[in-house]
Length: 635
Image (cartoon, rainbow, N blue to C red; front, side, top):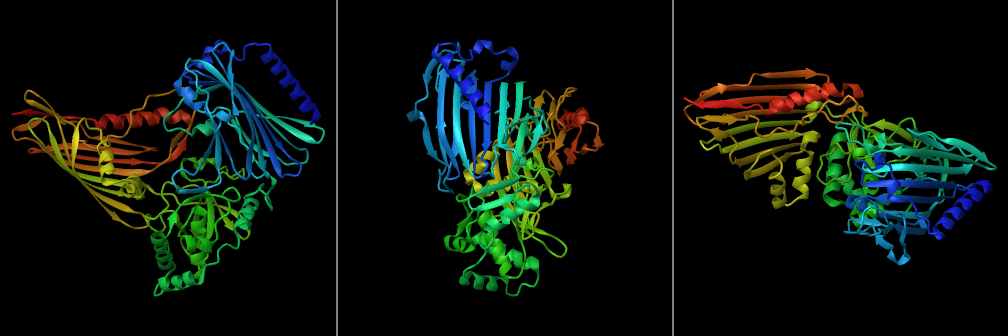
């Protein structure tokens, strides 16, 4: 430990001496062209040191980094943002700004650091605050340097390390060091970087280092950035936080901590107990009771984000939720669990990584990347899952936010890793029927009825409940690949079910939809569903091919054209089928009516990168077929 600190003091002395001598610090001209290519920001160096105290009651984190800002986009990304609360302190922040030649322009003044609350619009209760600072300089490139010291109370949260801050940030050199008691079982997983482990007296020192990371190249249908960029995930074994101790080496142990943290918070007030009895009167099945209680809770309680207490991990008790009429995901799930308990129905809160980051859960590496809580209600034959923060979703529907992923149940015996349901292709459907008329000038008027189910209705469901009618129409005017159109009618009917459905009625007036040249009219029968992208082959692809969603999309289109026209060129039927899905499109004409029938089925799965070109060929064939035109000639 002392040898390490002595070396650190020496380095800081040499660095400070160089500054006092006026030597340039990281001149922009020294950046290799390979590090500037397509970049907005270059991380010249980073030193992150995390020290776990022997008592496990404290972790200190020291971070020093230098960024060269190449343009305005890089300037926005160079902002320093550090959160603090009752469990995390920002002890000190220092910084400096240098010009392109590496000459000091000015140092950070403590009065320039903004101190902001996270509670912005009243939908949040939190003790989180933020230290925020940005150097402003009007001549690019320039360089900024920051050094931050932080303290975390407890050892539950250990800092991961992702040296590449964003896709357009390159990294010249970065180092991550963890110092832990020699007998402490530090747990970690590496991605494209391995540690060097040394022992210094009573400590083990783990060091990871990377150099020359280029800009991250986006690839369509790929893994997420954090899965592909070099980094280290770190998790505790034995830990302490406030008055709690635990062991996160197993899911069972992690769940025991979560269960203990929230135990005894399910007692309902007497008036709510009576309300429960009234609500389930005459309800004979578990499903009926769940639906009655869930619907009542939706109608009487609302979601508000709460980040108070032990890192946002501990729920409000049920009596508090009953009195206040609101709660966060933890509190509302615990409240629903309490309501069910009153009827004799057993349920479990489940920690989940909601949203796009479901792959952050590595089942072989227990840790807490969770950001949400849902409720699991086991049944004799089927399990019911409840999203307790929603005031509009039907009982039993999770949707893409939390479905198809590993979650951890909090049980008396500890944590149990289980999986939420996976939707089938037939659960996620969009079936559209269009009746349209093309006029002599090429204008098209259409009436469309669309039935969406499951994940296919989620975006529209959110718009219907989250936007005004005016904003909905504004969204609709940007939704279709049409050069110019007006919305004449837009009406929706929601059909609640375990797999929800929305019926949409739509009328559009499309200007110059068909191309009229002389005595010919060119018409694309696929009017509204041309969302499949054209993909370029890539023999150097890095990521596996990731198809996240599965669905079925059908279109039946009937277009009436002006009298006196006949088909001069009719596209041949298209049929495609492989492991990724299936596609058919058929265009026919009878009298003055064009009929178009299209069906697209997409599978979900993860495939080797070498298969991407095969998938790209499939999607590009669909892209072209979706744009096939029929040529009509006047008789």
